[in-house]
Length: 101
Picture 1 (cartoon, rainbow, N blue to C red):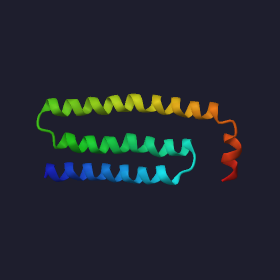
Picture 2: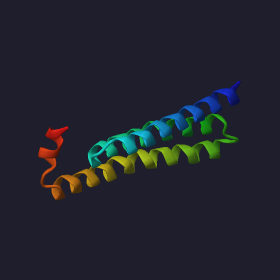
Picture 3: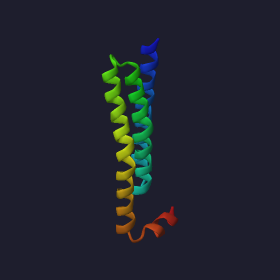
Protein backbone atom coordinates (compact mmCIF):
# COMPACT_ATOMS: atom_id res chain seq x y z
CA UNK A 1 0.00 0.00 0.00
CA UNK A 2 2.83 2.42 0.79
CA UNK A 3 4.36 1.85 -2.63
CA UNK A 4 1.11 2.88 -4.32
CA UNK A 5 0.89 6.06 -2.24
CA UNK A 6 4.55 6.88 -2.91
CA UNK A 7 4.15 6.40 -6.65
CA UNK A 8 1.00 8.56 -6.62
CA UNK A 9 2.90 11.39 -4.91
CA UNK A 10 5.72 11.14 -7.47
CA UNK A 11 3.25 11.15 -10.37
CA UNK A 12 1.37 14.12 -8.92
CA UNK A 13 4.62 16.04 -8.54
CA UNK A 14 5.56 15.20 -12.12
CA UNK A 15 2.16 16.50 -13.26
CA UNK A 16 2.79 19.78 -11.41
CA UNK A 17 6.14 20.10 -13.18
CA UNK A 18 4.49 19.45 -16.57
CA UNK A 19 1.86 22.14 -15.96
CA UNK A 20 4.59 24.58 -14.88
CA UNK A 21 6.55 23.93 -18.08
CA UNK A 22 3.40 24.72 -20.05
CA UNK A 23 3.09 27.96 -18.06
CA UNK A 24 6.71 28.84 -18.81
CA UNK A 25 6.03 28.63 -22.53
CA UNK A 26 2.67 30.41 -22.49
CA UNK A 27 3.55 33.45 -20.37
CA UNK A 28 5.26 36.39 -22.04
CA UNK A 29 6.96 38.28 -19.23
CA UNK A 30 9.79 37.25 -16.96
CA UNK A 31 7.91 37.84 -13.73
CA UNK A 32 4.97 35.70 -14.85
CA UNK A 33 7.32 32.93 -15.89
CA UNK A 34 9.09 33.14 -12.56
CA UNK A 35 5.78 32.71 -10.76
CA UNK A 36 5.06 29.49 -12.66
CA UNK A 37 8.57 28.21 -12.03
CA UNK A 38 8.46 29.05 -8.33
CA UNK A 39 5.18 27.19 -7.85
CA UNK A 40 6.62 24.13 -9.55
CA UNK A 41 9.77 24.41 -7.53
CA UNK A 42 7.98 24.37 -4.19
CA UNK A 43 4.95 22.18 -4.80
CA UNK A 44 6.33 19.81 -7.42
CA UNK A 45 9.57 19.18 -5.59
CA UNK A 46 7.77 18.67 -2.29
CA UNK A 47 5.37 16.13 -3.80
CA UNK A 48 8.12 14.17 -5.53
CA UNK A 49 10.29 14.15 -2.42
CA UNK A 50 7.40 13.08 -0.18
CA UNK A 51 6.75 10.21 -2.59
CA UNK A 52 10.41 9.25 -2.50
CA UNK A 53 10.41 9.47 1.29
CA UNK A 54 7.47 7.07 1.43
CA UNK A 55 9.35 4.74 -0.91
CA UNK A 56 12.54 5.23 1.13
CA UNK A 57 14.63 2.31 2.22
CA UNK A 58 15.98 3.50 5.57
CA UNK A 59 16.00 6.53 7.82
CA UNK A 60 19.22 7.94 6.35
CA UNK A 61 17.72 7.93 2.86
CA UNK A 62 14.63 9.74 4.15
CA UNK A 63 16.76 12.25 6.09
CA UNK A 64 18.82 13.09 3.00
CA UNK A 65 15.64 13.72 0.99
CA UNK A 66 14.29 15.94 3.76
CA UNK A 67 17.52 17.96 3.75
CA UNK A 68 17.23 18.40 -0.02
CA UNK A 69 13.69 19.76 0.39
CA UNK A 70 14.81 22.10 3.19
CA UNK A 71 17.72 23.38 1.08
CA UNK A 72 15.47 24.03 -1.92
CA UNK A 73 12.86 25.81 0.20
CA UNK A 74 15.55 28.08 1.65
CA UNK A 75 17.35 28.91 -1.59
CA UNK A 76 14.44 29.16 -4.05
CA UNK A 77 12.78 32.29 -2.60
CA UNK A 78 16.13 34.07 -2.37
CA UNK A 79 17.04 33.37 -5.98
CA UNK A 80 13.53 34.25 -7.20
CA UNK A 81 13.67 37.52 -5.34
CA UNK A 82 17.05 38.45 -6.80
CA UNK A 83 15.98 37.60 -10.35
CA UNK A 84 12.75 39.58 -10.04
CA UNK A 85 14.60 42.54 -8.54
CA UNK A 86 17.04 42.50 -11.44
CA UNK A 87 14.14 42.38 -13.91
CA UNK A 88 12.40 45.32 -12.28
CA UNK A 89 15.59 47.40 -12.11
CA UNK A 90 16.70 46.73 -15.69
CA UNK A 91 13.35 46.85 -17.50
CA UNK A 92 12.37 50.50 -17.63
CA UNK A 93 9.10 50.02 -19.54
CA UNK A 94 7.78 47.17 -17.42
CA UNK A 95 4.79 49.04 -16.03
CA UNK A 96 3.62 50.22 -19.46
CA UNK A 97 4.06 46.76 -20.96
CA UNK A 98 2.06 45.16 -18.15
CA UNK A 99 -0.84 47.59 -18.70
CA UNK A 100 -1.03 46.72 -22.41
CA UNK A 101 -2.11 43.11 -21.87
